[in-house]
Length: 304
Image (cartoon, rainbow, N blue to C red):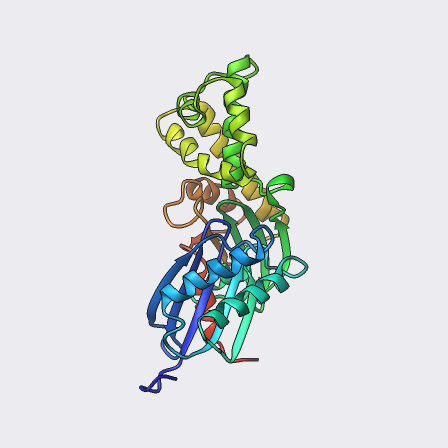
């Protein structure tokens, strides 16, 4: 507590692109401060960088200036059997840098905090994330009990931003060598790669970490909005993949389905397409901006 007797909690949503932190009053949930840091994927971000990114977000939110009773961090790659211990060590280290000593520090998977961000902070149902990567999960009593995809850029993340970026490059390569139809994606891809030649495009794809291809997903969205059939087809396929992830979780008609990430959050370019597909399953997606509100909600819960 500070001099006013108010208790504070912190929620974090550490994703593949950035880390968000929120400092809030424990009793009311009123936001006191927010902060941003670098990528927080517990599997792919080096340990020292992960500590630094978490500390950036926590410091900007004000976590070092007020006494914090509880911290809940949701991490991409932070599920059981994944990078949970690495995430816990990084979060503890970041809090120590700020001189914060909360009574409770809890690490969750990003799916758990995203689900808790849904309307009414639900305890049971489904969550689907589609941003840089993509994953679905079933949550029961606020714990993930089943997961689908989230297998990373090499093995999965079907329908994600990375998936769309990769498919955009493949579509342009096929248009260039005659294996596929012409597409308006060629012009922006050529500008990005420094020329519309196979060597340029392949060099761009292999010249940095593959996850960078997620940055191309907005090109697909813009081309589809302008009427390009190839780009629209990629968005349809991405939505099909994500709907398939939901189906694999054996949904029950009417149960909560919380969706988030750059592609499915409020106003997301795949939200309408997904809604059509899961509507056939008796589901209605509830989009949330991110999981930081859910992390705060979990931090405010009494210890069971």
